[in-house]
Length: 81
Image (cartoon, rainbow, N blue to C red; front, side, top):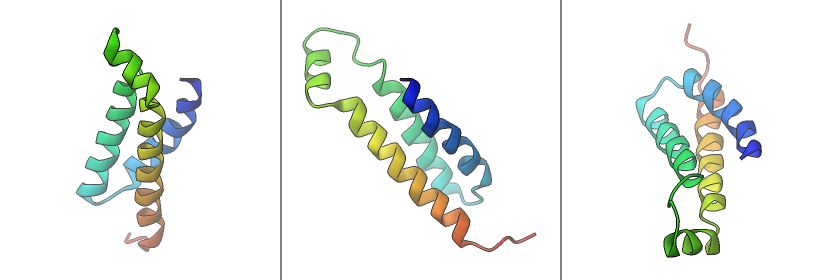
């Protein structure tokens, strides 16, 4: 959980720098999915299945890919100020 703080420190500036709506929505959904993956499911067989398939790791990978995609779009567009 502490390691996800590193990716969240990158997500926030990329989210704020993004001008288009679609990448912002993608980042928000991926960050929400990552936060939910660390606390859900609450227990029982579903939790065993979630841990068995490394669900939180898959969500972290999705968030990392979303950050790289959105961040590269921010860098690629010249500053329009």
